[in-house]
Length: 259
Image 1: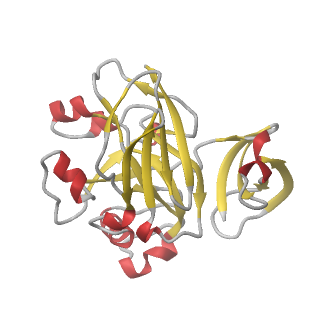
Image 2: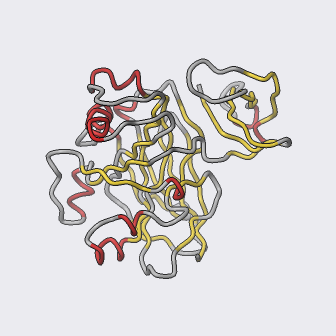
């Protein structure tokens, strides 16, 4: 099932997307009455996908990101792969949806894109073992862990560099029926492929990440874990467009603007 959050003629709602065949232009959007967790309660209202605007598919209480979870990405920055997952937080105010501009902060001269698979939590969990992690997951979406690389180097920690408003585009929707173990992930800037990898190259797999993060903090419905980025990250500039595609989910596209 594809779960989305939409702006429709009467407001904002969660919805499921039902495609007739493979063409998105034939898809119908079915409004969900309350929230997307558990069995959806539909209102009976529906629209063609082309008649609604896709928003960030979830508004998390927190975004937990994982650093250096692809060996070749760690290598391209001259870093070792940590024995345990390296986690950091991105504020909820970094989250934006498809087609919303990434705004470059004036205090930074190098802002990089980082394409990632994101895990969306479906129920409150604490200390969940990796073997049971799948039951705690609502689904998966596409994310861009935008990073002010120069500030990251200058600060020696990542709070400011990763925390600017608009620095966590996610979408276009949440895919619930997905095996995340070996998916193609590509990132393009103005149509040029910059990242081309598979999630099977993750050092710490999805179940391990849920286990580790939930041993540190309680995860709530809608919280997101960004699972790390493969090699090939690089700078973006105002006027460019970033598109990240994860196999089985879709493509997240955002323009880049000066802040």
